[in-house]
Length: 85
Image (cartoon, rainbow, N blue to C red; front, side, top):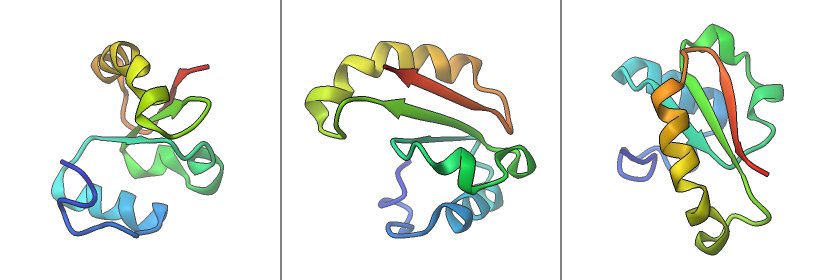
């Protein structure tokens, strides 16, 4: 599911993590490199995977998909994993 599909587009990180917890979502995939510094991810119980690329365009993000899939298989609640550069 995406934030947009759920009607959560524009939700700030803290609100987004709360909404995810309420519906039982387990992993947030984001390009926001600051989420781990702005939120207490450990307290949320949500695993966070941060995609790190030169830009947020599909051209730069698509090559990260294999590593993302691997990271999703190992994501732990309350932990942050970085995928990419």
